[in-house]
Image (cartoon, rainbow, N blue to C red):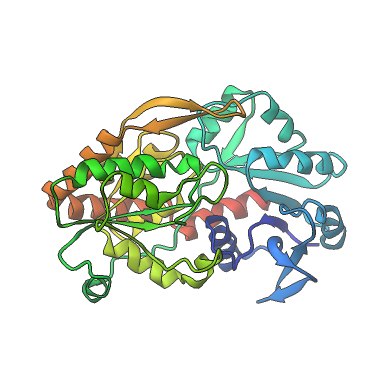
Length: 372
Protein backbone atom coordinates (compact mmCIF):
# COMPACT_ATOMS: atom_id res chain seq x y z
CA UNK A 1 0.00 0.00 0.00
CA UNK A 2 1.41 3.40 -0.97
CA UNK A 3 0.88 6.55 1.04
CA UNK A 4 0.08 8.71 -1.97
CA UNK A 5 -0.71 8.42 -5.66
CA UNK A 6 0.23 11.73 -7.33
CA UNK A 7 -1.34 12.46 -10.72
CA UNK A 8 0.12 15.36 -12.69
CA UNK A 9 3.03 16.31 -14.95
CA UNK A 10 6.05 14.00 -14.85
CA UNK A 11 9.05 14.95 -12.75
CA UNK A 12 11.07 15.26 -15.97
CA UNK A 13 8.56 17.55 -17.71
CA UNK A 14 9.81 21.11 -18.42
CA UNK A 15 6.75 22.66 -16.76
CA UNK A 16 5.90 24.29 -13.45
CA UNK A 17 3.84 21.27 -12.44
CA UNK A 18 6.75 19.03 -13.44
CA UNK A 19 8.93 20.96 -10.97
CA UNK A 20 6.34 20.46 -8.25
CA UNK A 21 6.35 16.70 -8.85
CA UNK A 22 10.17 16.65 -8.91
CA UNK A 23 10.52 18.48 -5.61
CA UNK A 24 7.78 16.49 -3.92
CA UNK A 25 9.62 13.28 -4.76
CA UNK A 26 12.97 14.80 -3.80
CA UNK A 27 12.01 16.03 -0.35
CA UNK A 28 9.15 13.80 0.78
CA UNK A 29 9.70 10.69 2.86
CA UNK A 30 6.23 9.41 1.97
CA UNK A 31 5.85 6.32 -0.23
CA UNK A 32 4.69 8.06 -3.41
CA UNK A 33 3.75 6.58 -6.76
CA UNK A 34 2.98 8.87 -9.70
CA UNK A 35 0.92 8.78 -12.85
CA UNK A 36 2.85 10.99 -15.23
CA UNK A 37 0.97 12.64 -18.08
CA UNK A 38 4.07 12.75 -20.28
CA UNK A 39 5.14 9.13 -19.69
CA UNK A 40 3.74 6.75 -22.31
CA UNK A 41 4.35 3.05 -21.70
CA UNK A 42 4.86 0.59 -18.90
CA UNK A 43 5.51 1.40 -15.26
CA UNK A 44 9.13 2.28 -14.55
CA UNK A 45 11.03 2.82 -11.30
CA UNK A 46 13.17 5.90 -10.75
CA UNK A 47 15.08 6.11 -7.46
CA UNK A 48 12.64 3.66 -5.95
CA UNK A 49 9.58 5.66 -7.05
CA UNK A 50 7.02 4.01 -9.31
CA UNK A 51 6.07 6.04 -12.38
CA UNK A 52 3.00 4.91 -14.33
CA UNK A 53 2.23 6.06 -17.85
CA UNK A 54 -0.94 7.53 -19.28
CA UNK A 55 -2.80 6.19 -22.30
CA UNK A 56 -5.14 8.19 -24.53
CA UNK A 57 -6.29 10.75 -21.96
CA UNK A 58 -3.79 13.63 -21.57
CA UNK A 59 -4.72 13.85 -17.88
CA UNK A 60 -4.28 10.10 -17.21
CA UNK A 61 -7.84 9.61 -16.00
CA UNK A 62 -8.23 6.53 -18.19
CA UNK A 63 -5.64 4.62 -16.12
CA UNK A 64 -6.45 6.01 -12.68
CA UNK A 65 -8.62 3.14 -11.44
CA UNK A 66 -6.19 0.47 -12.69
CA UNK A 67 -3.28 2.10 -10.90
CA UNK A 68 -5.31 2.58 -7.71
CA UNK A 69 -6.06 -1.17 -7.77
CA UNK A 70 -2.33 -1.89 -7.99
CA UNK A 71 -1.10 0.69 -5.47
CA UNK A 72 -3.99 0.72 -2.99
CA UNK A 73 -3.05 4.29 -1.98
CA UNK A 74 -4.23 5.99 1.18
CA UNK A 75 -4.71 9.19 -0.80
CA UNK A 76 -4.83 10.45 -4.38
CA UNK A 77 -3.80 13.97 -5.42
CA UNK A 78 -4.74 15.17 -8.90
CA UNK A 79 -3.00 18.42 -9.79
CA UNK A 80 -4.57 20.18 -12.75
CA UNK A 81 -7.24 22.79 -13.57
CA UNK A 82 -10.71 22.57 -12.02
CA UNK A 83 -12.45 21.82 -15.31
CA UNK A 84 -10.34 18.71 -15.89
CA UNK A 85 -11.19 17.37 -12.41
CA UNK A 86 -14.80 16.54 -13.36
CA UNK A 87 -13.96 13.10 -14.77
CA UNK A 88 -11.84 12.34 -11.69
CA UNK A 89 -14.80 13.18 -9.48
CA UNK A 90 -16.93 10.61 -11.33
CA UNK A 91 -14.22 8.00 -10.74
CA UNK A 92 -13.60 8.82 -7.08
CA UNK A 93 -17.28 8.58 -6.10
CA UNK A 94 -16.78 4.82 -6.53
CA UNK A 95 -13.77 4.88 -4.17
CA UNK A 96 -14.82 6.94 -1.18
CA UNK A 97 -12.53 4.90 1.07
CA UNK A 98 -9.56 6.61 -0.63
CA UNK A 99 -8.96 10.23 0.27
CA UNK A 100 -9.10 12.32 -2.90
CA UNK A 101 -7.44 15.73 -2.84
CA UNK A 102 -7.91 17.73 -6.05
CA UNK A 103 -5.04 20.25 -6.10
CA UNK A 104 -6.32 23.19 -8.12
CA UNK A 105 -4.96 26.57 -9.22
CA UNK A 106 -7.35 29.52 -9.09
CA UNK A 107 -6.16 32.00 -11.72
CA UNK A 108 -9.44 33.93 -11.96
CA UNK A 109 -11.65 36.17 -9.86
CA UNK A 110 -14.94 34.31 -9.67
CA UNK A 111 -16.30 30.77 -9.54
CA UNK A 112 -19.05 29.72 -11.95
CA UNK A 113 -21.68 27.06 -11.10
CA UNK A 114 -20.30 24.24 -13.26
CA UNK A 115 -17.05 24.22 -11.28
CA UNK A 116 -18.67 22.89 -8.10
CA UNK A 117 -19.61 19.64 -9.84
CA UNK A 118 -15.97 19.09 -10.78
CA UNK A 119 -14.94 18.88 -7.12
CA UNK A 120 -17.62 16.57 -5.72
CA UNK A 121 -16.47 13.65 -3.60
CA UNK A 122 -13.21 15.31 -2.60
CA UNK A 123 -12.05 14.58 0.94
CA UNK A 124 -10.68 18.12 0.85
CA UNK A 125 -9.95 20.54 -1.97
CA UNK A 126 -6.37 21.85 -1.94
CA UNK A 127 -5.52 25.13 -3.59
CA UNK A 128 -2.30 27.10 -3.97
CA UNK A 129 -3.09 30.48 -2.44
CA UNK A 130 -5.32 32.36 -0.01
CA UNK A 131 -6.83 34.04 -3.06
CA UNK A 132 -7.85 30.61 -4.31
CA UNK A 133 -9.26 29.61 -0.95
CA UNK A 134 -11.35 32.78 -0.78
CA UNK A 135 -12.76 32.35 -4.30
CA UNK A 136 -13.67 28.73 -3.56
CA UNK A 137 -15.24 29.73 -0.22
CA UNK A 138 -17.56 32.19 -1.98
CA UNK A 139 -18.91 29.19 -3.90
CA UNK A 140 -19.44 27.18 -0.72
CA UNK A 141 -16.29 25.06 -1.01
CA UNK A 142 -13.96 24.85 1.97
CA UNK A 143 -10.36 24.45 0.85
CA UNK A 144 -6.93 24.09 2.39
CA UNK A 145 -3.94 26.09 1.12
CA UNK A 146 -0.66 24.39 0.26
CA UNK A 147 1.49 26.70 -1.86
CA UNK A 148 4.07 25.80 -4.45
CA UNK A 149 7.68 26.08 -3.40
CA UNK A 150 11.20 26.84 -4.55
CA UNK A 151 14.54 25.30 -3.66
CA UNK A 152 16.16 28.43 -2.20
CA UNK A 153 19.53 26.66 -1.94
CA UNK A 154 19.55 26.28 -5.72
CA UNK A 155 17.68 29.43 -6.80
CA UNK A 156 19.99 32.08 -5.38
CA UNK A 157 22.02 35.13 -6.46
CA UNK A 158 25.00 34.29 -8.67
CA UNK A 159 27.49 36.30 -10.71
CA UNK A 160 26.45 36.69 -14.37
CA UNK A 161 28.77 39.33 -15.87
CA UNK A 162 30.25 36.90 -18.40
CA UNK A 163 26.82 35.56 -19.33
CA UNK A 164 25.49 39.05 -20.03
CA UNK A 165 28.47 39.69 -22.31
CA UNK A 166 27.79 36.40 -24.08
CA UNK A 167 24.21 37.47 -24.79
CA UNK A 168 25.30 40.97 -25.82
CA UNK A 169 23.54 42.45 -22.79
CA UNK A 170 26.51 44.07 -21.07
CA UNK A 171 25.42 47.50 -19.81
CA UNK A 172 21.74 46.81 -20.53
CA UNK A 173 18.86 47.16 -18.10
CA UNK A 174 17.29 43.71 -18.57
CA UNK A 175 13.63 42.87 -18.02
CA UNK A 176 12.66 39.18 -18.01
CA UNK A 177 9.28 37.53 -18.45
CA UNK A 178 8.73 33.77 -18.24
CA UNK A 179 5.53 31.97 -19.16
CA UNK A 180 3.53 30.08 -21.72
CA UNK A 181 2.26 31.99 -24.75
CA UNK A 182 -1.43 32.02 -23.87
CA UNK A 183 -4.01 34.71 -23.21
CA UNK A 184 -4.09 34.72 -19.43
CA UNK A 185 -0.35 35.50 -19.20
CA UNK A 186 -1.12 38.91 -20.78
CA UNK A 187 2.11 38.95 -22.78
CA UNK A 188 0.63 41.53 -25.13
CA UNK A 189 0.11 43.94 -22.22
CA UNK A 190 3.59 43.23 -20.89
CA UNK A 191 5.07 44.08 -24.28
CA UNK A 192 2.94 47.22 -24.54
CA UNK A 193 4.00 48.31 -21.06
CA UNK A 194 7.67 47.65 -21.83
CA UNK A 195 7.31 49.71 -25.04
CA UNK A 196 6.01 52.70 -23.08
CA UNK A 197 8.91 52.34 -20.64
CA UNK A 198 11.53 51.77 -23.38
CA UNK A 199 10.69 54.81 -25.47
CA UNK A 200 13.79 57.00 -25.95
CA UNK A 201 15.96 54.49 -24.05
CA UNK A 202 18.81 52.68 -25.80
CA UNK A 203 20.05 50.69 -22.81
CA UNK A 204 17.03 48.49 -22.09
CA UNK A 205 16.23 44.95 -23.22
CA UNK A 206 13.19 42.68 -22.87
CA UNK A 207 14.10 39.00 -22.49
CA UNK A 208 11.22 36.67 -23.37
CA UNK A 209 11.37 33.08 -22.14
CA UNK A 210 8.32 31.90 -24.02
CA UNK A 211 7.23 30.60 -27.41
CA UNK A 212 7.31 33.08 -30.29
CA UNK A 213 4.04 31.68 -31.66
CA UNK A 214 0.74 30.86 -29.90
CA UNK A 215 0.64 27.66 -27.87
CA UNK A 216 -3.14 27.52 -28.20
CA UNK A 217 -5.88 29.55 -29.88
CA UNK A 218 -5.67 32.22 -27.18
CA UNK A 219 -1.96 33.02 -27.66
CA UNK A 220 -0.13 35.63 -29.72
CA UNK A 221 2.25 36.07 -32.61
CA UNK A 222 4.73 37.86 -30.39
CA UNK A 223 7.12 39.06 -33.07
CA UNK A 224 4.28 40.90 -34.79
CA UNK A 225 3.35 42.60 -31.51
CA UNK A 226 6.98 43.48 -30.74
CA UNK A 227 7.36 45.07 -34.17
CA UNK A 228 4.02 46.84 -33.84
CA UNK A 229 5.25 48.62 -30.72
CA UNK A 230 8.61 49.55 -32.24
CA UNK A 231 10.74 47.20 -30.16
CA UNK A 232 13.00 45.80 -32.87
CA UNK A 233 16.50 45.68 -31.37
CA UNK A 234 15.16 45.92 -27.83
CA UNK A 235 14.13 42.32 -27.24
CA UNK A 236 15.52 38.80 -27.40
CA UNK A 237 14.00 35.36 -27.08
CA UNK A 238 16.08 33.30 -24.69
CA UNK A 239 16.46 30.22 -26.87
CA UNK A 240 16.36 29.42 -30.61
CA UNK A 241 13.00 27.71 -30.98
CA UNK A 242 13.74 25.18 -33.68
CA UNK A 243 11.15 22.67 -32.46
CA UNK A 244 8.11 22.66 -30.12
CA UNK A 245 10.04 20.85 -27.36
CA UNK A 246 12.69 23.56 -26.96
CA UNK A 247 11.97 23.86 -23.25
CA UNK A 248 13.25 20.32 -22.72
CA UNK A 249 16.69 21.51 -23.86
CA UNK A 250 16.74 24.37 -21.33
CA UNK A 251 18.16 23.00 -18.08
CA UNK A 252 17.31 24.37 -14.66
CA UNK A 253 20.80 25.82 -14.22
CA UNK A 254 20.25 28.05 -17.25
CA UNK A 255 16.93 29.24 -15.83
CA UNK A 256 18.74 30.31 -12.67
CA UNK A 257 21.23 32.19 -14.85
CA UNK A 258 18.38 33.95 -16.68
CA UNK A 259 16.75 35.09 -13.45
CA UNK A 260 20.08 36.50 -12.30
CA UNK A 261 20.80 38.22 -15.63
CA UNK A 262 17.59 40.23 -15.27
CA UNK A 263 17.44 43.46 -13.31
CA UNK A 264 13.71 42.96 -12.82
CA UNK A 265 11.05 40.44 -13.79
CA UNK A 266 7.58 41.30 -15.09
CA UNK A 267 4.59 38.98 -14.66
CA UNK A 268 1.31 40.81 -15.04
CA UNK A 269 -1.10 38.03 -15.98
CA UNK A 270 -3.51 35.86 -14.05
CA UNK A 271 -1.72 33.14 -12.10
CA UNK A 272 -2.96 30.19 -10.12
CA UNK A 273 0.28 30.57 -8.23
CA UNK A 274 3.18 31.96 -10.26
CA UNK A 275 6.22 29.68 -9.91
CA UNK A 276 8.56 31.88 -12.03
CA UNK A 277 7.77 34.79 -9.71
CA UNK A 278 9.03 33.05 -6.57
CA UNK A 279 11.99 31.63 -8.48
CA UNK A 280 13.03 35.12 -9.54
CA UNK A 281 12.50 36.52 -6.05
CA UNK A 282 14.55 33.66 -4.63
CA UNK A 283 17.37 34.75 -6.96
CA UNK A 284 17.27 38.15 -5.29
CA UNK A 285 15.57 40.07 -8.11
CA UNK A 286 12.41 42.20 -7.72
CA UNK A 287 9.34 41.81 -9.93
CA UNK A 288 6.57 43.87 -11.47
CA UNK A 289 3.30 41.94 -11.13
CA UNK A 290 -0.37 42.53 -11.82
CA UNK A 291 -2.26 43.50 -8.67
CA UNK A 292 -4.56 40.49 -8.80
CA UNK A 293 -5.04 36.83 -7.86
CA UNK A 294 -2.36 35.80 -5.37
CA UNK A 295 0.33 38.30 -6.33
CA UNK A 296 -0.10 40.16 -3.03
CA UNK A 297 0.80 36.94 -1.22
CA UNK A 298 3.86 35.72 -3.08
CA UNK A 299 5.25 39.12 -4.13
CA UNK A 300 4.79 41.57 -1.24
CA UNK A 301 5.15 45.33 -1.84
CA UNK A 302 8.64 45.40 -0.29
CA UNK A 303 9.81 43.06 -3.07
CA UNK A 304 7.64 44.11 -5.99
CA UNK A 305 5.67 46.78 -7.82
CA UNK A 306 1.99 45.97 -8.22
CA UNK A 307 0.64 47.18 -11.57
CA UNK A 308 -2.97 48.36 -11.64
CA UNK A 309 -5.75 46.21 -13.08
CA UNK A 310 -8.01 48.22 -15.35
CA UNK A 311 -10.96 45.94 -16.12
CA UNK A 312 -12.01 42.28 -16.02
CA UNK A 313 -11.93 40.07 -19.10
CA UNK A 314 -14.88 37.68 -19.32
CA UNK A 315 -13.97 34.41 -21.00
CA UNK A 316 -16.31 31.96 -22.73
CA UNK A 317 -16.48 29.87 -19.55
CA UNK A 318 -17.91 32.78 -17.55
CA UNK A 319 -14.85 33.40 -15.39
CA UNK A 320 -13.25 36.83 -15.13
CA UNK A 321 -9.58 37.69 -15.62
CA UNK A 322 -8.08 41.05 -14.77
CA UNK A 323 -6.31 43.08 -17.47
CA UNK A 324 -3.11 44.84 -16.33
CA UNK A 325 -2.61 48.49 -17.25
CA UNK A 326 0.35 48.85 -19.66
CA UNK A 327 1.06 52.35 -18.34
CA UNK A 328 1.20 50.99 -14.80
CA UNK A 329 3.59 48.23 -15.88
CA UNK A 330 5.77 50.95 -17.42
CA UNK A 331 5.61 52.91 -14.17
CA UNK A 332 6.92 49.91 -12.24
CA UNK A 333 9.78 49.34 -14.67
CA UNK A 334 10.68 53.03 -14.50
CA UNK A 335 10.82 52.83 -10.70
CA UNK A 336 13.61 50.24 -10.85
CA UNK A 337 15.36 51.88 -13.80
CA UNK A 338 15.58 55.28 -12.12
CA UNK A 339 16.26 54.07 -8.59
CA UNK A 340 18.69 51.15 -8.91
CA UNK A 341 18.98 50.91 -5.13
CA UNK A 342 15.41 49.59 -5.17
CA UNK A 343 16.61 46.56 -7.13
CA UNK A 344 19.01 45.49 -4.40
CA UNK A 345 16.73 46.48 -1.51
CA UNK A 346 13.59 44.80 -2.90
CA UNK A 347 15.61 41.83 -4.13
CA UNK A 348 17.12 41.16 -0.71
CA UNK A 349 13.73 41.42 0.97
CA UNK A 350 12.15 39.14 -1.64
CA UNK A 351 14.73 36.41 -1.11
CA UNK A 352 14.37 36.61 2.66
CA UNK A 353 10.57 36.43 2.33
CA UNK A 354 10.77 33.41 0.02
CA UNK A 355 13.10 31.52 2.35
CA UNK A 356 10.67 32.09 5.20
CA UNK A 357 7.40 31.21 3.45
CA UNK A 358 7.96 29.18 0.27
CA UNK A 359 11.07 27.04 0.63
CA UNK A 360 10.30 23.49 -0.48
CA UNK A 361 11.58 21.98 2.74
CA UNK A 362 8.81 23.84 4.57
CA UNK A 363 6.11 23.20 1.98
CA UNK A 364 6.74 19.46 2.03
CA UNK A 365 5.85 19.32 5.73
CA UNK A 366 2.33 20.47 4.87
CA UNK A 367 1.87 17.56 2.45
CA UNK A 368 3.27 15.11 4.97
CA UNK A 369 0.90 16.34 7.68
CA UNK A 370 -2.06 16.14 5.31
CA UNK A 371 -1.44 12.58 4.11
CA UNK A 372 -0.38 11.12 7.45
